[in-house]
Length: 229
Image 1: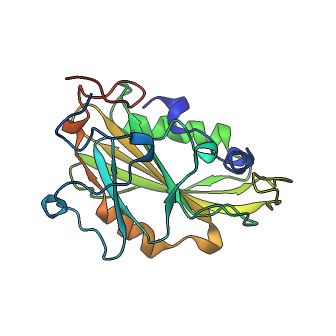
Image 2 (image 1 turned 60 degrees about the vertical axis):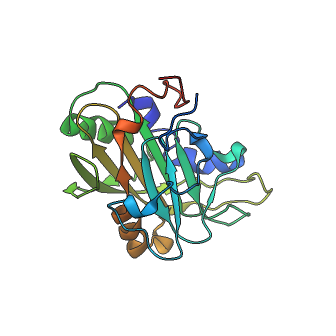
């Protein structure tokens, strides 16, 4: 995992963000904005809840709740391969959001990845941040996966892109590290105000994840763009 990529825009920066060649495989898409379901959803091994949107990008797919949309370009976390959530229309608190990261660097197995991520979170989040212990989870297509919760208070913003203020908010953020045999690896992050964090929705999103690393190996560059091969 490239540390500076995976940690991008945590904590106070989350609020500041708001103020501010083809292949036959599904990977041949505009990764930053991909929202199209795989060609044959019936071949998926992970279920997608009825009425949800099945989205795919660089070597993975995930279902998101109705009404969720890709972030506009000016609000995106550019290092992510997917950035979706409740549209920001001037809410007083950061709306629920899902970020997905594609990791293409050799930095060790999941134990080391978790240690690095925890150190980065601790150094980049506000002083009141707390990190829970991790638990093992099952993700379709993955060799292993684990998740842990993070709690912190986002900074207040006097003026967002809509011209409205945003108050300091207690955030719950779940970090899901997904391991494959070799590269690439994946990171999923779901964050929402504690009062809006939907545990059932997160469980459904997590159960719908399917990773397909073979689609990515050798067919995207370091920016997640398709290349010939």
